[in-house]
Length: 360
Ligand SMILES: C[S@@+](CC[C@H](N)C(=O)[O-])C[C@H]1O[C@@H](n2cnc3c(N)ncnc32)[C@H](O)[C@@H]1O
Image (tube, rainbow, N blue to C red; front, top):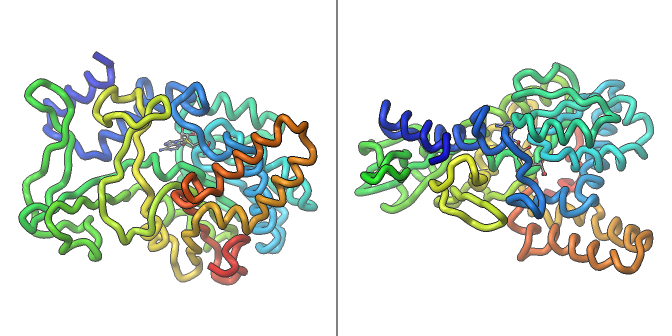
């Protein structure tokens, strides 16, 4: 039995079923046995591959996006370039290389990385050694000042709560123990209403499952507040939807395949689709506007990914051209990441729309 399973069973036996958010938090972030703190799960040999690991084009375009946002801010002499959940540091390294062509931008940048994983911090330290990043356990310790925030596949890893409608009443879906000691979903006692269930779903038909992610709302609200106060922008990229659709998106992945989410806790990646509608509600304030979400494919095309691919193909030996073509198709294709992944931006209401969102 894994040590994490033992910890979970003990907690549930002691205090009863736990929320799904608590389950995700223990599995993903437990300091000794959590999925992220103990390892680098990215890449072909790991459990999943992200856009920056597919092609340098992804990070390069985001670096140029950040450069234009900095120009739109009036080119402050100091700006914090923040990445939430930077993985291997690949996106940031590619972004900084591309952004070096924006005059004076590199001299203005201080890099701040929000990362819970000591294992991944070590990989990031190597990838970004030349740039002297500072690390944070969470966004609350970021320094005050103008900031540009990037988050790719970060919000899907944050803990969610689930609610299920039965006989016109709401129950929370909790994690408990079956008679044989296996982890399983159990339902809380019924409630006629639940403050967490959004108004748009509160009279949903029986059988509806609704997910909410208060951790994500809180982070986005703090980021929007910082952008409103100090100037800047944020770019959030993830798989998700606009919030109008209810449904169960909680999933586990191991070795690039879906996996039962209650088997092998701490050994599988746990995620849920991001509700961009809810994030936009948290980001729309008196001084900030949420743009999007747009589909990733059209967004990258608006930033010039096809033109960048053409340039790269001319620079590399013929044998590598297929790799670039296939990366382009993976990042933009509607059957691949181009439609499932969405992009949302936050900017101050007194600045122009950020690149890619001009007509959004
Ligand atoms: C799916 S990976 C994405 C990595 C990278 N952004 C990329 O696109 O390759 C999720 C990243 O977020 C980090 N992470 C997960 N939960 C976190 C949390 N609650 N706070 C800070 N970082 C977290 C992980 O350690 C990892 O670096």
